Amino acid sequence: MLERKKFGISTISIHGEIKDKSYRSVVYPIYQTSTFAVEKSDDYQRFIDETEDFYIYSRYGNPTVREVERKLALLENTDDAILFSSGMSAITTTILSFVKAGDEILSLRSIYGVTYRFFRDHLANFGIKVNFVEIDEVDDLENFLTEKTKLIYFETPVNPTTRIVDIQKIINIARKNNLLTIIDNTFATPVNQNPFDLGVDIILHSATKYLSGHSDLILGCVMSSEEKIKKIRSVKNVMGGNPDPHQAFLLSRSLKTLEIRVKKQNENAQKLAEFLAEHKKVKKVFYPGLNSHPEHEIAKLQMKGFGGMLAFEIDGGLERAKKFCDSLKIALNATSLGSVETLVSIPVLTSHIRMSQDELEKAGISESMVRVSVGIENIEDLIWDFEQALDKI
Ligand SMILES: *Cc1c(COP(=O)(O)O)cnc(C)c1O
Image 1 (cartoon, helix red, strand yellow):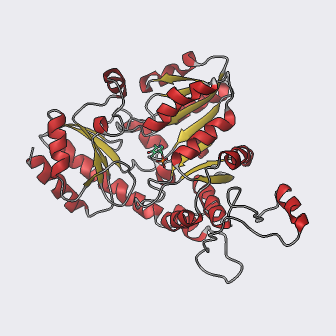
Image 2 (cartoon, protein in one colour):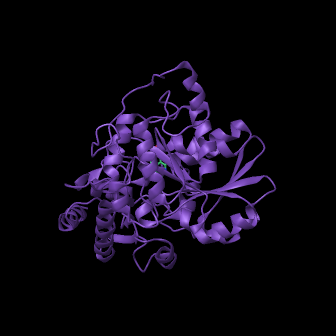
Image 3 (cartoon, protein in one colour):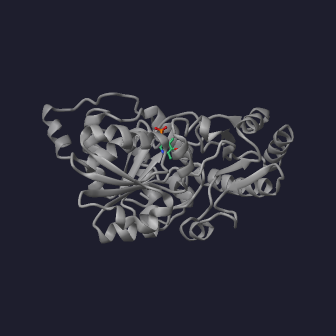
């Protein structure tokens, strides 16, 4: 097993796999099975004793899934990882592993829409209260803590404004108050940001996005210390958010190109952001790699790359934003992100459709805002596409 501290992301994601002992196949096999036969009836005891590499039923564990879990842990530099059937399954299972009725969670309000709904609408049914803070209130985070607060939950960069949360500030407050910290690191990826190295306890991803990177599967994962992963795994075994071995194989394959994909996405996003910032029909561009970004300096400190997500406001209203998106010839108008193809979406019509005017204002989202997940196409072609679509409005 390769050590993350010693080797780079691509080396790890290509060579960090468990080797197939049976036939020395270069690629780890897909164990497409729900169950595993024991040699002797007494063997079940071995599973209960938690012996490594011993499988009895695929909800509890599967070798192909395990192979990618090991690799995911290496990428975020944690002890261990769990693969889930979706990002939401990873999020809900992880949260429910650490809170009980009467506890409270402190969360940034600007988080993935469905996570927000889980926090606001569903956790209340279990007697768990979530207190939300705005990104500009992070400096005063301590004022929002109560005796019952158990954990702090956040994302950075924030969707869709790409605002940056100062991870160190959150860690300092969490450590002082003995709170667990959980970050959704989907937007940044392990290539651009390593929260575990900065002191965050638990890292979550929608592996549907950059980690898989080809818009062809739904998966999620969580990375953390051995002790915390053990706890979450025992809850997962009951809740049943286990992934399919074939999808796990596809993810393992995708991880081999994670670094080159994300580096190209960073590069393309920077160039597209610079092009848009100069365009007369564009009012404002939101990208952490621009000097005009409010947290450009924090991004430089805590990130290794500025990411492939950007947003911009078109001069005009929703109709012009729609006309722009409908005029693109290469980029696709679709929800989701992180894939090899460039995707655009209008947040008020997609990710933020259920939000009130007040919530939209607090999140800094306007009607004419277009979010872009920049792909790995040739940048000249993307700029050509955006230019011709802007010409049409
Ligand atoms: C997509 C997404 C999720 C949810 O993941 P699924 O794989 O769709 O369940 C969670 N967090 C962020 C930041 C996302 O973009």
